[in-house]
Every structure is written in C-alpha cells, then in structure tokens.
Amino acid sequence: PQVSAAVFRRLRAGQRRVDGEIDLHGLRSAMVEPALQEFLALALREGARVVRVIHGKGLRSGHRGPVLKLVASHYLARVDAVLAFASAREVDGGSGAILVLLAR
Image 1 (cartoon, helix red, strand yellow):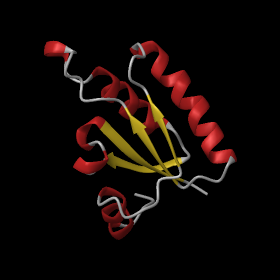
Image 2 (cartoon, helix red, strand yellow; image 1 turned 30 degrees about the vertical axis):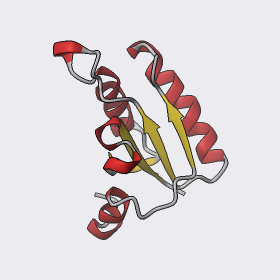
Image 3 (cartoon, one colour; image 1 turned 120 degrees about the vertical axis):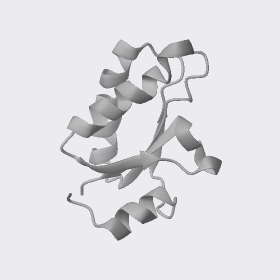
C-alpha cells in the first residue's frame, strides 16, 4: 500500500538498479531469516534502494515446492523497511529470485 502501482511495475520490470544481492542457495530454511536480517541491515546502512534475493526455484524440493522462496517471502512481508517485493524478470532469475524495494 505504501508504493504506487507505477513504482511496483518498474520494480517488477527490472527497471531499477540492483544495489546488492544475497544468494540463499544451500541454506536450510531455518538459516534464511537470520541471513536475510543481516543482509537487509547492511543494505539499509549502505543506503541500498533495491536488492535481489536469490533463493532458487526449488527444483530439488520435490512435492514441497520452493521452500526457500516461501520462507524468504514470509520474512520480507514482515519487515517494516521492505516497501515491496516481486519475482525478478526471467533474465534476472525469474521465479528463482526476488527483487526487494527498501525504504530510505
């Protein structure tokens, strides 16, 4: 609700410069929140506006689907400094990555 439709469209379209990224591949689900918390705190201190969270597509997760994506999405939805997030464009990771818009 804090972000206009135009800003959200630009985020989803990959029209914002990515200021940093974290790759969660290989982490267990219990390690995702602490890793994101540390990464976002650093990104905010450095003045990052848009960051990419690479979680993978969950191809080896079997019937459970993309576990890391689910954990990351639930965490991002609870962080006050996160204004919006969306799956990246296909060339930037598609459904295996999330673009996150941070508050200033």
